[in-house]
Structure formats: C-alpha cells, structure tokens
Length: 489
Image (tube, rainbow, N blue to C red; front, side, top):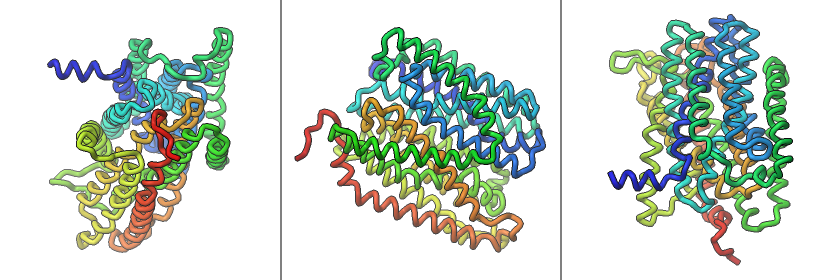
C-alpha cells in the first residue's frame, strides 16, 4: 500500500485527472467516427458518395483545426478554458445531430468539429506542462493518457455497434452527449490543478488578458458558421491541402531564422521526425478505408464459429493500445534502468518498420487463402496488432517530444502541426485506398493479386523509410539536446 501511495504521490498534480478527462472527451468522437457514414446513408438517405464525402471532410476538419487550437490555447484563451469551451460545443453538436434532420446534422457537425478540432491540442498541452523539459516521466504519462483515450474509443465503438444494429441513432448521439458532458464535469472538479504553467498568456496584463479572452470566445463561436459553410463546399479538400503546405513552409522558415543554436537543432530534428511520421500515418489511416474493404470482401470473418462484424475490427487496435500502453511504459523504465538507450529516433524508426511488417503480413496471409480466395482472419489480426504497437511507439512519444524539442513560444504551433500530420496523411490514405479493387471487379480469387501487389509495395516502402531513419539515428541524437546538456563543439 505504501508503495502505491509513493507512486501516486510521484504523479504531477493534474496528470491523473487528465487520464479520465481524456477518456470521456473521446467518446463523442468515437461515436461519430464509427457511425457517421451509416447515419448519413441509412437515416438521412445520403447517397454512398455523399456520405463518404461527409466522412472525409469530417476527418480533414477534425485534424486540421488542431493546429489552430494549438495557436489559440495559451495565447487568447487558457488551455483549460479553450478545452471546456470546445467540449460545450461538442455537447451541443451531438444533441443537434440527435435531432435527426439534415439541417441539424450539418449544424451539429459544425459545432462538434469546431469543439473537437480546437480542444484536442489543449489536453495535450495541459499534460506536457505538468513536466519539466528533461523529465523522463512525461513519456510514461503520455502513454497512460493514450491508453485512456483508447478506452474511450473502445467504449464508443462498442456502444455505437450496439445502437447501429437497431439503428437507434438518436439514443446513440444522446449517449455521446452525456459522455462529453462528463468530461466538462471532471475538468470543473479539477480546475485548479489544470492551470496553465508556461504560456505566453501568463505574461499578459489584466487588461490584455480580458481583451484576448473576449477575442478567443469570438473566434470560437465565429468558427462554427465558417465550418458549417465549408462542410458543404466542393473546394474544402484543396483548402486543407493548401493550409498544410503553408504550415510546413512556416515551420521551415521559423527553424531557419531561430537564433538559439540548441533549440534550432531540436527543431530540425522535429521536422525530420515529423516528415517520417507522415509515412506511418498515411498507412495507418487506411484502416477505416482500404483495409476495411479488404476485410469485408476478402477475409474470412468467421472466428471460432462466430462472425466478427467489420466495425469491431477497429477494437483490435484499441485493446492493444489500452493494454500495451502501460506495459510498454513499464518495459521502457526497466530497460533504461539496465542501460538501454531507448530514445525518440529509435522509437520512430521501429514504429515505421512495424507498420511496414504489418502490411507485409497481408500478402503473406493471401498465400494461405482458401479455395474461395478468403484470407484467414489471423493475418488481418496480426497486421492490426503490429500497426498498433507501432502506433504506441510514435503517437504518444510524438506528443511527449514536443515538450522536449519545441521552444516555449512555438510549443502550441508545433503540437498542432504534429496533429495536423494525421489530416495530411488521411489524404494520402485516400489515394492509396483508391488503388484498391472494387468488390464488383471480381471474386476474392481474382482481386487477391491486386491487394497483394499494393500491400507489398506499401509495406516494403515503409520498411525502407524505417531503415533510412535507423541510419539517421546518430545524426538525430546529435541534434536533440536538453537545456542542461553541454554543447558539443
């Protein structure tokens, strides 16, 4: 008992609360992510193409607004204020969608996306501020928080699947509303422990603080009609691509002109690692697209006499993350205590190699297909597990590296940029998924060859990028320096 108390007392104030806040705040997104296409097509009677387009824009805005949230949080509104404000919009948005009409659907989606897009960066910024830059506990905290997020995903996916069977969509979105409201309640009870510790807003005078607060609220509310309009626009995808390109150019410029040599080197390392992560996320984002199509049409989904519904396949990832996050955190502590050098470059390169191996497992599984061309479920399961372990090595570790590598004035922007990468990757994932054969193109026996060719190309290409990153590990280690580390001449 004393050992448990000692460990709990070692957790920075607010970090434990953020685990549960993260879990409840994820429920609404999990419900929409897994139900949006079915709700739009079955309840609102959208065409398949229109429903798919709505899902694509949903992902683009959710990840695209993370960057903007990183800028607003800590500059106009404190991260805790912006987080709660965003959750309020999510609650109202889910309630609107539960109304059941097309008009309420678009307004609800605009409210929800504005909230979720802006507040996700806030929760990561609140967590990273609990630790000093050199504090090695930050990585473990993000692994635990990532596990909490995936608990929310698991519950959201599970409940969504239940309500989808009966198409009780109103009840489903009410459930999402209540889940999001609980995140607000938890944040309120832990308000003092979630205070910002190191942001530009803390240096503002009382008058400046009030002006920025009013401007922040105006931006938060003003974004809703803008998002509502763009959700129905045909040029939204090109807009997102343009913004991503401008962000990349801006970060490159900020790195080049930065004066502090140590921070500048850290920023270069961040750019290299972020670029490599784009390869990982481009394949990862194929899960709800191309990989799901492959699973539905070419994989034997009968396991031990029970049919595995396609939507439950995503829970392979969530279960791996929930159990793997804490286990990996404990493993890293032990290995480092024994002298193992497990750092960010090594973790990133390993994650890319695991992602490549995950995709290479699929053409291997195709070799074991039955006489109808159906691939044993084990190979799809293995692929998802490998991808999920790779995700543990790159996603929470990527969040944690921001607090270490980003200069104070760029932390919010660099955190938002890191999350924006997922939005860019979604576009590439759509391109890759477009290469997958349509079900009408033939039977599993005739389409397996095309699947095998595509998965092999993607798998070997990703392994190659991972190997290149392995070669760059010594160079990246020279770039990444903590504040206390002496400069090497």
